[in-house]
Every structure is written in C-alpha cells, then in structure tokens.
Image 1 (cartoon, protein in one colour):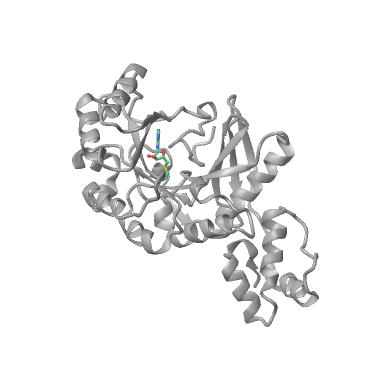
Image 2 (tube, helix red, strand yellow):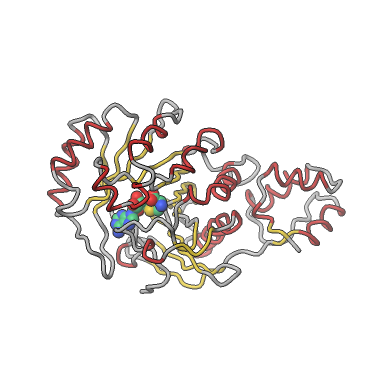
Length: 346
Ligand code: SAH
C-alpha cells in the first residue's frame, strides 16, 4: 500500500529513500518541488529515474478536498474539508490586511468537551494524520493563489481549529517539523502557535520533543473551580500543574506564552477575575488574548458588553501585562473561535 508523501518529515523522507538504496538527496529535491515551489505534478526535475519509479510505486500525493467555501465580509474564509474516509473538518484562513493566518484542525471533533465550545459538542471521532494537517495548509494555500492572487502568502499557522493539538501530539509535532523545514515551506518558528486546553500528558512532552514553536494556553479563569466548569479536563489536569509545566518552557528573549482568556458575561469577566489573573500571570513572559465569547446555536453563555471587556483589559494592563482584545473574525460565517462544527452546518 502507498503511504502519503505528506506524512514524512525531511529526515523521515531521507531515511525512507536511504533504506531503499536510493540517494537521500532526493528528499531535498522533493521537498523543494512540492513544498517550496508548490508544484502539483510529479517531480522529475533532477531526480534519479530509480527514485522517480520508487515514488510512483510507493508514495501517494492525495490531498483532502474542499467541499464548501464560505467567505466572510472581512475576507476570512472557512473551508469544509473532506478527508479520504469521508470525515470532515474545517480550516479557516483568517485575513488581516492582505495577510493570512491559517487556523488548522487537528482532530475530527474533540474529546475535551469544553462547555463554551461548539466543536466540543461533537465528541472525538478520530485524530487527524500528519498528512491531513499538512493537506489543509496546501489546499488552502492553493485556493489563495487561485482566488486571491494579489494577496500575500500564507506565513502564519495557528493550531486553533477543531481538536486538541496536544492530544494528537505525534501528528502535530511532525506537521510542525515539516512546516519549519528549510528545504520546504520554511515557515518561521515564531510564526507557528499551538494552542492547548492544558492537556498535561502532551505538555509534559513539549520541552523534549516540540521544535520550539509558540504555545498558547486556553486559560479562561485563574480559579480552579470556575475553570473546571469551562474546561472539564481541568479536574484531571489542574491549572496549577499546567502553569508549572508552562513555566518550565525555555523562551527566547522576545518569545511569550499566549494566555487566551475567553470572556463570558457574568461568569469570568468581573474585576475580581481580572485582578486574580493579573496577580497570577504578572511575573510571566505572557501575552493575554482576550476573546469575547462567540455565541453559537444553543450555547448557554453570553458575550460581555464591550465596556466590560475594556475594563478587564485595563486591569490586566495595570499589572504590566500586554492584553489584546482579539477581534472576531469571520463570525458571519460561524468561523470564529469555538464555532467550528461540521455537524451543525450553516
Ligand atoms: N483545543 C485547543 C485549540 C482549539 S480552540 C485549545 O483549547 O486551545 C481555540 C481557541 O478558541 C481556544 O482558546 C478556545 O478556548 C477558544 N474558543 C472555543 N470556543 C469559543 C467560543 N465559543 N467563543 C470564543 N472562543 C472560543
């Protein structure tokens, strides 16, 4: 059976060629052809005939398919993507002044069951494979070239789509290695961010295995009790423990850990919450992203008023914490945070 080209890290591909008595330099040519030059057709350029034959017989280049495209007024695009087995996930291109950040899914559904998240209502169907994560990037990138040729290339990646990336550690790790590789897309290490609900088994592997990309924590409350209700895995992996692991991540001088704070009206948006957050995070290399709750059909929470969000932000700033309010992108197409759900379609 053929294996997907898109599952191989550069090293993995070189090893594969080596094991089959082929020159490992073929990996450089292939990465260049498919990832740097973004060619769709077979790589023949400079590649030994024996390597070409091996690739034809053993590797597949099948990509997921875009089955629906929704374009928001703010240029954000949401794709519904069909995988080989018919499962579907969503990928979002978040537009910002002609530049795009791609928001990748890592699982079909999600096992975390966060009470504020639309995706969480589906439960976990399965993990995505590395090639399905890479595939989202490639097809979205091609879509951009074809449909918005004057816009800039895709250079920012956030693992903030459906799923808990650290629950699918191996696939996410290899995908990061592929994105970063200098022979291929060569995305900057500071341009990739993995967001986690605080999945400790994955966090415990971070320092030893992840290649230095940014990490974001869905923080949402400084209080264990309140966080338990929002993020049920907090009962098993409490915030206190999670923060200890995050503190152990070595950061470069201008590197920060991003703490995402979902603001829910009358639940975690009070001055008491803001001060407790400020106290807890003030000594850290932190950036706080405030995300006003995005409602979805049937959700039990409400979005706070803007003045409340501003007040919260100002309190955090008084602790010298950079606190940004994340603008809601693509909310008219249900592409905003926590609104990704392939079952309850638009
Ligand atoms: N599982 C990962 C990544 C997916 S969620 C994680 O938990 O971090 C990406 C971000 O969107 C998280 O910060 C999540 O808490 C937030 N989010 C989820 N549902 C939301 C909603 N309804 N409104 C606003 N933000 C939401």
